[in-house]
Image (cartoon, rainbow, N blue to C red; front, side, top):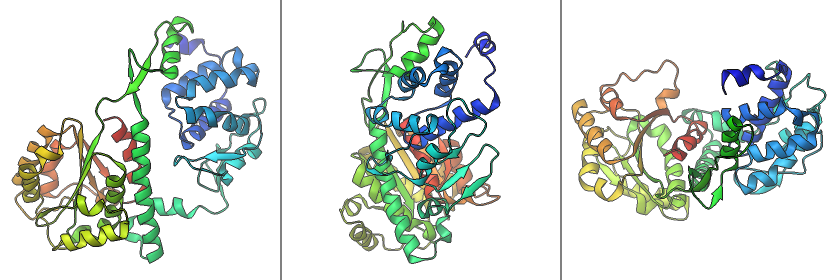
Length: 396
């Protein structure tokens, strides 16, 4: 937004800005693609004549925030529940399956004040029985088990039922990521669909006249994902959950390959393509003899680059390495092989569970040698950190 436009906006008050921010957050929690640009445009609309009547505000915001058919189907219910205090009958989750509305979304309709009364902005997240006000305090009626598991470090899961549920959630997460990533479209001058959100954004500089039309079309080349999992002893507390995540990746991504490594590299894609996840893990365990010992990351990457890279990697491939970076081999070898891999693929993401630990720093020699060739160095100690990978993969 230009400085002149920003100064021309009337002061809506802190409470209204907070309420609008919470509304955008509620949309995001229900699967909408809404960022800073959309929030800014919504503020421009709210400062105009449309704010005097909800019947005018609804279609303007619907055109701004809805970029998919599923968004158009959900927007009216969320708008009514938040701004007009009308109950929401149902909620369509990110998985796409209609379910009974969570308590969080019901609380939006009962706790929201409507457009005329904006003293209290209620913030309710999907999937939690938590109501958070603009003061930052929470009234918790009991957080959902799924939310708690998503934030729990895998090494702290000791109960068999917790581990089993984490395995199932990891597999569902991988499938959901695939479904949403493939629906993403990129902006183009021509295409089969008009991108209303970007078109409206560009029209602001022309006084609201849509002189520049932006279209959308599907990405020409699908993302290929290659996952290399460290199965050494230092990773034993994390490898079981990641195997379920990898099973979901191979089951959902049309172009994906999976490997485990310790003192040697094993190609496990054929085993993980078993439909039954338990049978897939059992079959993989027979192949991966020697897991739980030491690790030679450099030698294993050399094997991958020599025998598998040409077949597995193309220009639209993301290589995802899951390891703590402790290499018993020479660090120079790891750096050399990472450089060779970097020349072949589009992105390299290194997921290190230890990043989620307090006061962690990449001091291991192997990790230091690999860092210059990594595009994303991210934590992978719980399900929430895995979910954070989706926006990154969607941009590739």
